[in-house]
Length: 456
Ligand SMILES: C[S@@+](CC[C@H](N)C(=O)[O-])C[C@H]1O[C@@H](n2cnc3c(N)ncnc32)[C@H](O)[C@@H]1O
Image (cartoon, rainbow, N blue to C red; front, side, top):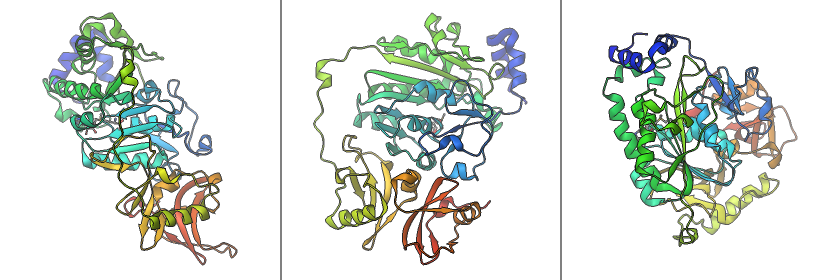
């Protein structure tokens, strides 16, 4: 790989005798990784090679997964760089927490966080770029998580709406991307000597807003996919100097993981509690990760509940009836109560009443999309199908792998079974729910989203 001269000079100085091993590692083959999704029923049975688990992520494996497999389409696996996947583990999301992923697209960390929350609590996944936020929403959708809101905002706007709201805030910051050189040689073309310092300015701006949203006693998780001290140890040193109530939570260093280097920051010994994932020591593209805790005690006044604004999106009587008709026919037990339903336009969402009012924010996904009202009928969504387990529903239709291939390509499926009632079915292939289909006589009509169709 042809590395910029300034880059080589800089890391020769910083890494000393290790520099040549570091440069050589950037020519090694990319080692791919993936995670399996514990939100899915029988997730341990995915049909991919699970021979090489990674030690530091409970659901992580070494290996490549194709985007055209049933496992991928149905949300059982998520492809993620082996170093990036340690971030989600460091977040250690727990059911019931309120978590913000401020720079979330395409969703590697957000999907991991959502998958750890067992559908309890709230993850707000935010992405500033609209195009990328759409991809983020799609990736979140495949996980089947019910407790995720996807927004497309600037950190400043979010901070005004959700001050001190979260238990954990994740800033996987836009950075100079030196850890992307091997995977995406194009990243080299953006790099210049002053780029890391320029990125650091933006990172500080983002962090100032992120900290406004962190609740007293909460945790900030900061990460980059770059090796530049300006964006790594120096950012953490800056945080410690400017927010003296923050303390580093020392992270576990598994085999191959390096400690943060105090001399790369301000010399503070506690920087060793951060993690550097360097490609000449660790299978993965490279990352820096730090966790900081807000050490301020909670004040009595801060425990007072804020007055809630009246939420929009109440259903009409007719919409409520249409949903209930569908739910009674389809579910063994109706999973959402009326106060958990919101309607935006014709679209029906699950939205827990305890979640904050986001009506003034640009959202891509205000909760779990359940379906759409169309001329006196309700049509369930693909997203709802991906969030369901077979044992929750009355109407399950098992199809063959060939029929799955046809369906995801946009075709109808012909059945030879006679005894099935017409109506909506959760389609399942090899035990994995993957979409809704509407049976009309012996034909399963295709409702696979047009933009997601693919051929095998
Ligand atoms: C490193 S990527 C995030 C990767 C993501 N966390 C994941 O695991 O898939 C950084 C993201 O920050 C976004 N970003 C860029 N400028 C930003 C800003 N000023 N504030 C917030 N996010 C920004 C980028 O669009 C990009 O999607």
